[in-house]
Length: 121
Picture 1 (cartoon, rainbow, N blue to C red):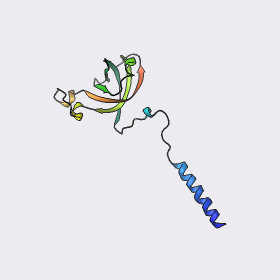
Picture 2 (tube, one colour):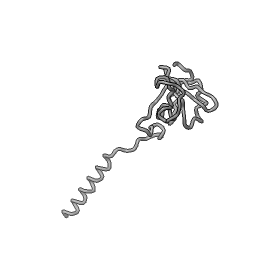
Picture 3 (cartoon, rainbow, N blue to C red):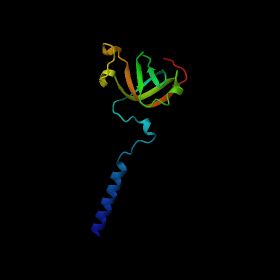
Picture 4 (cartoon, rainbow, N blue to C red):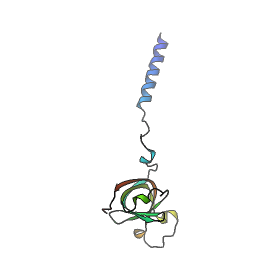
């Protein structure tokens, strides 16, 4: 009878440990950026011919790279763009400018959220 009691106790403890583990986050995977360095930029979406930028309220402009096929419907609107950011210098690309303060940053699109049909920025 002692072996059965020990086995039951081990099974009970195992079940308790499994319950205590964190479950993966629920929802759409795009709601959870995959990079530890993901940023969110909120601003006015501008662009044409598949080339888009977002300008935030401090005047910083980000070139949006990646799958931009869903952005055209948000032109002239305020949006939140989530993705990893970099500068042309980070990628070894010539910027044609001197001084990092004036370089246009790049955001690699992971997610877009519509904020408003007008730009308040």
